[in-house]
Image 1 (tube, helix red, strand yellow):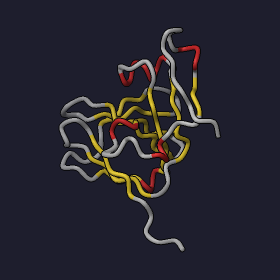
Image 2 (tube, helix red, strand yellow):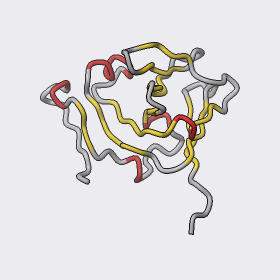
Image 3 (cartoon, one colour):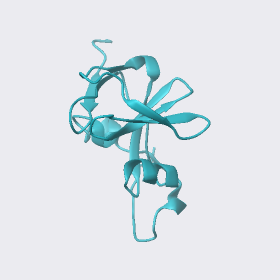
Image 4 (spheres, helix red, strand yellow):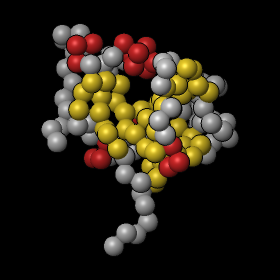
Length: 131
């Protein structure tokens, strides 16, 4: 039967901004768009999504700082250490970067799609599980 919902935890490099995300992770994917590259400093970002009301900011630093990056989204980061945490969309969605989770290798985080493949250099290869 139902049982307790799964709680995924994580946070920034310095630990000031921590989060707890409840329930299954949605839309696990990677993205090589230029905005994700600039936000993370990586050629490809790996994300999962949660409904905004399923994410709570639990660390001593409270909620992350945000930068309005587009008409539909703001990028979240720690004001103390600068770590990128994800995106807080105008739609009631919080997209969290996989590297910020305490257990980033969870099977349910395995990307199933890759956005903006043309944004990656030809020598950079990203695999996505079909499904």
